[in-house]
Image (cartoon, rainbow, N blue to C red; front, side, top):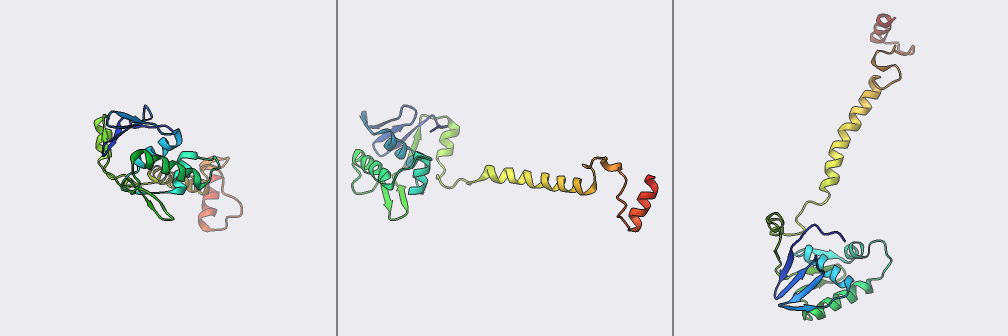
Length: 179
C-alpha cells in the first residue's frame, strides 16, 4: 500500500510509524502481523468515521478472496496489543464495521500534512477527481457532437456542399451559393 504521509500517528500512549511499519507503546515496540498493521493503519487514517468490513477487505486484501474471519482475527490481535478489550479505542459497530474513536495526532510530518490531519477524516469530498474529470468531459462531448452535426468534422469540412435531400429555403440558398 502506497503512503503519501511521512509522519507518525500518536494516540493515547501509542505511536504508529507507517514508514517503518512499527507500533510503539511509549519506548516499547508492539509486534503485529503485517495485515494487522495494515488494518490499524487504515483505521487510523480514517479515524472518527465508520469503516465498513467491505471497505477494509477491499483496502487491505484487494482482490484476494478472504473471509470476514480475517478481519476478525486482525481486530482481535490489534485489541490485544492495545489492551482494548472494552473497545474504547476501536469500537465495533454491529453488522456495519469499525470506528477508531481515540484522539489521533499526526506527528513528525510536513506542515501541510499536519494541517490536513487536523480536519476530521471522512469529511473529505469523495470522488472529487471523478467529478472534475466528468465536468471537463461533458463539455468536450457536447462540442464534438455540435461539430459533427454542423459538418465541421465531415470529410469535406465546413465548406462541403449540403446534401441534395435538403429541401428548406436556407438549404437551397446555400446549395446555390456553393455551386
